[in-house]
Image (cartoon, rainbow, N blue to C red; front, side, top):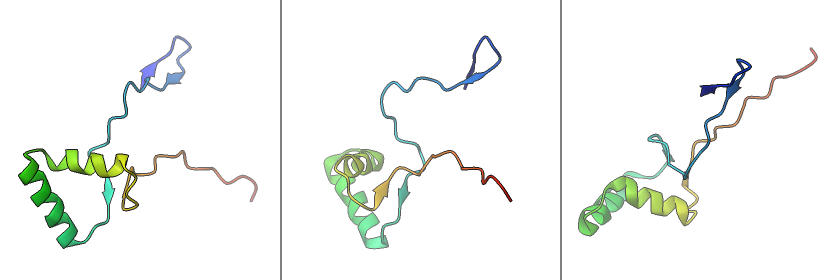
Length: 75
């Protein structure tokens, strides 16, 4: 977060979609092993394989939801 002139916090501009280190990937052990094997065979990082999975929209690979928590009004 960078500070604006008014002291207001401004969100930094996102240049390209960089996936966070912590990706929610609730996959089974054997799937994880398969991904690691695929990464090894292709000679790329596991993260790259996971990124591909996300881009192709595999349901288990989702970016962690980073929404603002809604404050409940009225008690």
